[in-house]
Image (cartoon, rainbow, N blue to C red; front, side):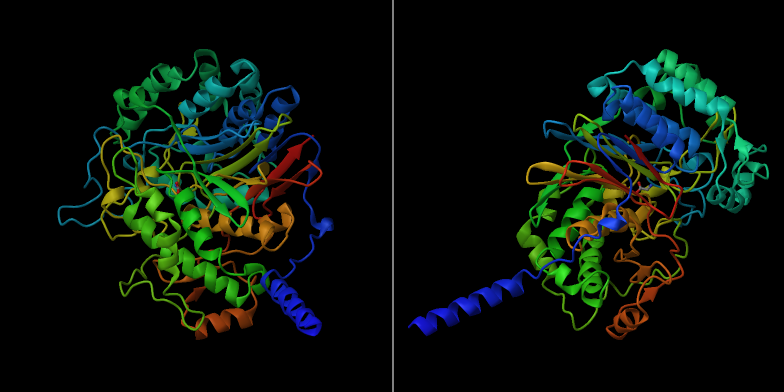
Length: 567
Ligand code: GLY
């Protein structure tokens, strides 16, 4: 009897061990910047510094959001903007959560078939280059709405350093020099005259932005309506129409940012808070995480065959749903709760087997060649009060539509390409859309932006997000898993090599030279198509992790000029 009991106890403890194998220990030597109070992590040091200065002055994360967003518009013109839009998710010091959508809208004169020729074929370049690609910008409305609801410092105090930065200028980095070189041809194509960025800028040169400084100064003095109803609005509309665009003063006057309830879900004891439609980010992230949750990822190990298989198969299924169901919730019925229901996702994953790749479809979309990896930008902020924000903002492609308004000093987005111009035809990210994301006047185009906040045991754990078009969702996913499943530091988690699958095209993208050859070979043997050439960089993740001792660790992605600053 006693022997049997001991045996039973032994078996019980053995199987408990099997179910919960220990995770690797955190390598404390691999931490990013650690600070005691508050932090900003963004794509440029100048923006992180301006945001941090606002925090040091006693401003909160929302004041710093306005400062950082507008400083990125100066210091990081390839993605930071006032000619685009974005999303913010927040968790305040008391644990209240929310989100704001300042996504661009289709102009009033937009039509469903505006990018199709007489035969019904998509006209190449029309939704990506020049004035016809531009959606009505939301950024200025967004930052003012955030400030109105939560801000504590006067607008002047927040914007003065931004105006000063634009006047003083910003030093060109090595990566920026290379980026500017790559875009000379589209700049020349999209603009009637030569623009500021068509000089032969070199690393360490300083680019001054006097026109943008003037625009920012007027916004500082006259408020958000300067952009939507004032002199700036009039000059912008004239510029757009002179360049063959359809934006009107009415379009700008009607623009409003919208407060949205974020998507929330549980993952292995974490509470994930992410952006709701018109971003697909939160729903897609929820689908993928809930589909992978039953699998012992930490037991399989980071970027091992089994981990990659499980994650890829969940991604495949989530992106297939994205393309069919998701769009602007003010125009279409998005079955959000159904899409993230446990039974539904269990059923979706039931066809997965470790023995063989699932096939996405027989439809070939092999013509999609380009993944622009640097578009869009993300920043995370945590203040000393405990407020946290995650913000992703964009003009879509790198330098947006490439159309630069020299008079006002900023690039215009090409966000209209995020609509589905024609069902079944991929956009520049290779994403396929359906009726839910078709074009209509004043509709917001579907996004992949995934600003995300993570809670553990009812407390703030992480703020995270990234640029990367369709790869945004899968990059955020891997970063959260890297911290939670593989016990990486924030800095390790953002630096770790990434892969991506989006249903169609049916191929896994890998950052080159970062994965074991044997793993890639095994994937191919199982029927997966792999590609290491198309995406040299997948995402540029920035995040902040709250450590057990309450300090903050910044993760600033080594793939860009991203920088964590705090105090
Ligand atoms: N323009 C990229 C996105 O919103 O997903």
